[in-house]
Image 1 (tube, helix red, strand yellow):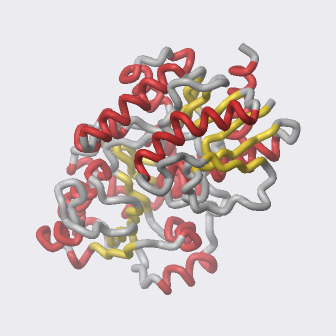
Image 2 (tube, helix red, strand yellow):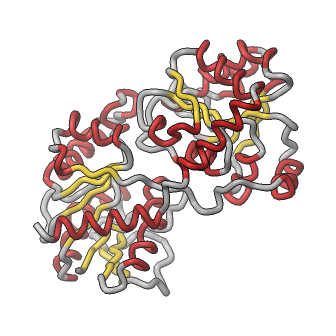
Length: 379
């Protein structure tokens, strides 16, 4: 079988779609050496494409030097389908929400989430909304929709009207580097980052759905009950304080909790396993996630997680965490205190989380994706 894959996010390992593609494709190529994989890259993409164990093809558009957004749409709707025809592809896979309306081969699309559709504050400009209508129409025409969680599958069925039999859940996975760490492995990172001896970790973004202001308000209620533990907030901080990306540093000052909150800013990938493993707990109170890799990374390191209810996060952490309503400050504060002070509960959740995390692997995701290809091709 010959599979053409939209490579618009190839090389972009700081994006979820890029991480997905760059983890999945090598595993599929390893597991299915008799299949031909053709990675189709936009002409304007400046990404490494040499010496790869699959075909790499450029699909330039007339707009590559003029408009990034229009060139992207042209690539998705015209250049990529033409490349599929030229390559004689038996199947086309678009690993993010941008399938073409028409293609010369059956289309499989991976929809990680519907954030720009279901959350009003993420709908953007009129042009963004028009683009999402185009992407939605293409998704409804796809032969099969892959998605990262049952929560997202329900949204795709409800919001886009895709029949349940054309949706398949295939879980993502954490990188193998996320595993329990010894104290000796953690110590250099903890000392270099000047972390406190006891801390609860937040690592993620600061846009509105991440719900960081609620976490900081919960710290006001919990601060004197945490037995000396501090909240360590990691992630690239907002450049501007806006309603969409409220600056947590301002909120901490206004709440008067500077003594129990430490900001790390951006953290290097190689430091994250020790950062997770050294924490008493990981907290991620997001209101909506299509999957949520950080909580899976945390429980893979043996650190229990506190997550927001209402989307995929309860699936991701399973018995390895505590789920609370994101708007319930009291419940969030109680969960923080529980995991900061109850060593027995932490150990119980840690063991359960490690067992649960063992179910997620990129090899499993690749096998299930290859089976999805074969099911579509066999229709």
